[in-house]
Image 1: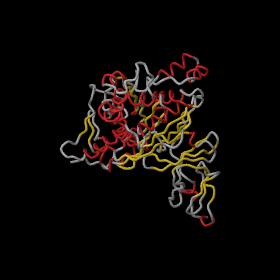
Image 2: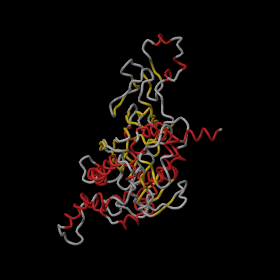
Image 3: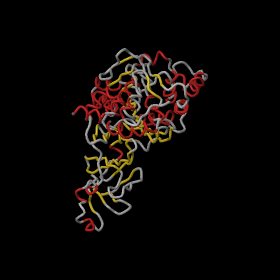
Length: 446
């Protein structure tokens, strides 16, 4: 028997310190509340500035279940608008990406809007004289999201008009983004092509949790990475022979538990955290000729070494993205239903760095995250088995108590054993917080 989850407060009761109720994954009611509260109150990744480099360039995506448009209004000014005409509600753009010129034009009745969303013109406007249209939100133009922040090229937005600031929401977790950008000798990234994009028939939170689940690689990936390692070892290559890039990428997935324990996990408030505090599966890639020299020229030898020695594995930014700094990748998990999630895997070019780095990043993305990958499908099968299994009656709670500490507090930074499930608990602590954020703020103001 499930819980009644008709409001945010009751949904928050589905999360306890050591376990979460299955309804957080399978209930359409919970999904609807998440879209209305979690994805409205948190800061959510939209896109990268390099996806809209020129005036009038736009990129269409969504925040939770809300369609939005990232658009370049001026050379140094990017806006995020709701993808909806204020007249009859028609979607303004349906193409994924393009250039709208100086204005957007609704395809239904030709209302037009500047690229900052302001109303530009209405055909036969005199028909609205005396109606009070100009005093309504509809008469002002396309609605912008509540707040937008361009952080080192990454565009984030908060749907809610009022709420937590960008700086408070992310805090020190931005160090992972900083490291990814700083790996460019010019301090800039550019998106390389469209993302690898495919459907997962499971709840979006399963994908987010898996990014810091270090007890599954050597088990779930034995049939893919394990076999690849076995076949490579059977080649009996001479000792010291250079390991191919593909093997450097896939072999670490079969590292033992001790490797992942020693790797460490760091968590920050508001659901952010990363694996790979001390080392990671990205630590032993071959050096690319000319890259370190380019970094030294920009940063000096000491700082260049500090930047490149930081090999964080997966950094989760609550609610729904993961980045890999050493491999310049970002994955976003877009929820479409309680049991349906679109996964987009982007790669970035380090501006000013050798092209071989981009080639390695593209290889990693194809091998691990593509619809045709040999690793990602292991995870996908586990997600879909779990989505089905959670409907089985008898056990209604999901356990997340591995290495749980007494009176665990998620309001500060923590660095712990790499196989702890603390980051999963941290994410659910943030989930509960932002599910009820607007109501808590109202009560605090009384």
